[in-house]
Every structure is written in C-alpha cells, then in structure tokens.
Image 1 (cartoon, rainbow, N blue to C red):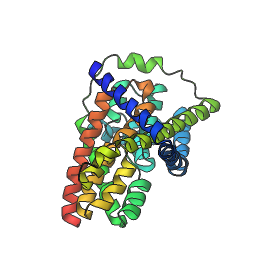
Image 2: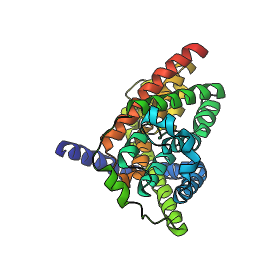
Image 3: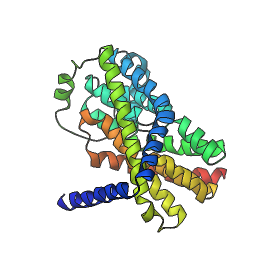
Image 4: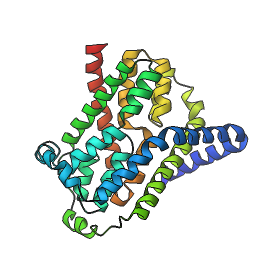
Length: 306
C-alpha cells in the first residue's frame, strides 16, 4: 500500500505541475468534461436515477418482477429483482444498474450477497450510447453498434452465471437493519442530485487525467493507445478506436472496453455502491471478466456478420 500511495502522490503532483504550466489546456479539458456530462450524461441518466429510485421506494418491484423469479434463481441465484435491475440497466446504461442495486439493498429488499451477485450482470451500458454514439456516429454504421451491444449484453448474461455463487456472511441481519431507510420525495431528489453531480465530477477529473497521460499514450501505436485510453474513459477510447482500427477489430475492441467500463465508469458505479461497501477488487474483477466474455462473443459475431 505504501508503494501505491507513493505512486499516486507522484502522479497527482505530476498532474498539478502540468496544470500550473498549461493552465489554459487543463481549464479547457475540464470544461470539455463538464460539457460531456451536461449535454450527454445528465439529460439521459438523471431521469432514470430519479424514477428508478421512486419505484424502489414504492415497494412494487416484487409484483413487476415476480414472473422472472424462477429463471433468475436458476441462472443467477438471485431473486426476481435481478431481472428488473438487469432490464433497467440495459435500457438506461451506466451507472443506473449500480445505483438501483444499491437502492434495493438500502431499502432492505435484497441482501448484500444478492447485491454482489447482481453487480456482475447489472452494470451495463445502454443502447443510446452503444448503438447511437459508438455505432452510428463514431463507426458510421449502426449495424456495428448492434453487434457491439449484443456482445455486451450476452457477456453480462454469462458473467452473471459465473458469479452466481458468491458467498458472504450475515446477509439476513443486514437486510433487516436497512428496512427503515428514508424514501420521501425530498430525500429522493437530493440523493438523485448528489449521485448525478458525483458522476459529473468524475468525468471532468478523468478528462484531466487523460490529458496528463497523452505523452505516455503517444509512445505507443495508435490502436494500442486508443485501447489504453478506453480502459480509462470509454467515450474517448471508442472515438479513437473508430479512427484507428478496421471495423472488424473496432467492434471487438469497443465491446471489450465498453463492457469493462473504463476506470472512470467503474468509479462512478462504486460511488453509487458506496452504502453497499462493495469491494473494489471484486467489482473490477467482475468488470474485467465481463469485458473478456464480451470480447470473445464479439469475435464470434464479427466473424459471422463482417
């Protein structure tokens, strides 16, 4: 830990020094991050965070998801809540799945053990980003976006099966102690606002971090540098991948980094999962295995359709 802390301290000092030397550049990049959040993430994610939290507080999820109880138990070893969060995550994208999982746990509707299982397959990107932004706009072909999205979702499904047997202690006790969480309208509004603001801060910070790492990325061939950037922040990574790879390899690379989520998205999700005390190592392992599975599925689909 001491070596990690020393490394982080040196890296942060390096960023601060760059900000002093190139203040205009870093101010512009911070504003670019805020702009990306304000015009892309905020309008699409905020309503989902608010309304999914309202639904969770109404205690009606059991009725909506009851038909999925047996399939969820058989496949993912979770209650029917797993299907509800999975479908919501697919529709809305990062980091709504993580937020809804944490809300269900906080409301006492699922145990911590079940929440840990659900994070393995309920943390996904949405079709607006994958098919629209990456496929139609960045790659110039919506069909490629459908291939990436299919690989991404199939990978999540398989990942949930792999992590279905996670075990932890004292689940029942924790579930009971959290049933009295506040869920009035004002607390929902405040919680939704704080959640989306924290996402914006992380996005802006990672625009700054990528700018500081550009001299290192420039040492590598463009395709490798693009994947490296994607492992940090998926939007910029996908954009650079689209400009430096053929459609075949772009589909595979984008499937991998979108499913991994990038460090930026992982931190956004961990922020949502804060009250769950989600182990960082476990969540990163889940995202890495999701990325590998999605990459393998993408190879198969690319060989068939491209």
